[in-house]
Image 1 (cartoon, rainbow, N blue to C red):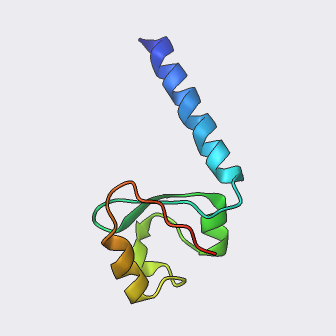
Image 2 (cartoon, rainbow, N blue to C red):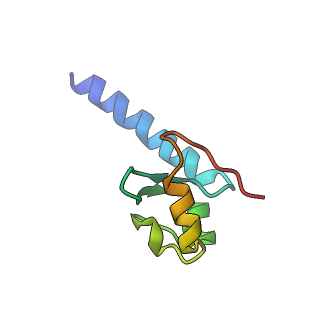
Length: 79
């Protein structure tokens, strides 16, 4: 059981490190509009971190409303 937990933690750490090396801003947002995770690019370019998506100054209110209407697991690509 301990080995299984250690393996899951190692995988989680690897994926977090991988996401932080991606040059695209990645945000994970829950169904209430709370950012639960942001990679390094999102933290740097958007000044985004855990908390309400509405607090991200790079997003206006209309953008936040539109993003909140997307179905779960949606991906949005911005030019």
